[in-house]
Image (cartoon, rainbow, N blue to C red):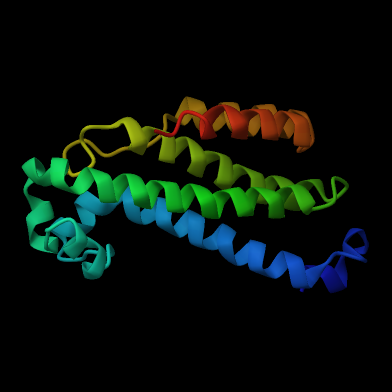
Length: 171
């Protein structure tokens, strides 16, 4: 829809960009699922497929016990990597948005940069199943993301440097 209304998108390869946009959305959704897992479990919801939990010998109700984190950790890492791979494609999508479309580019940059930072925190936290320790990036980190990319007009160099910095720190 944007492509037909904004002049900067004339010539945008929609056939290539639509799958990247879908992957972007999947990546953000996976970040939310992984981040909200402890709370969702306590509300009777588990968005981790049982087929995957079966592979590590767990059932959804067992994730309520924080001591199952050791058995769950390999699957959790695999899901983090999958989310990161989706976000990688989302980053390609974001960087393909013409720089002159600053507001749209920033609107795509901010969630993905917050998402990669959240994945990094999830990857190193021993408390991924603890409902008492929600994993969120600090408000100051959000302000830093918005300021550094906003002040540079969504510059690809600044955003990609930040992206690469946190991406490399996902264990």
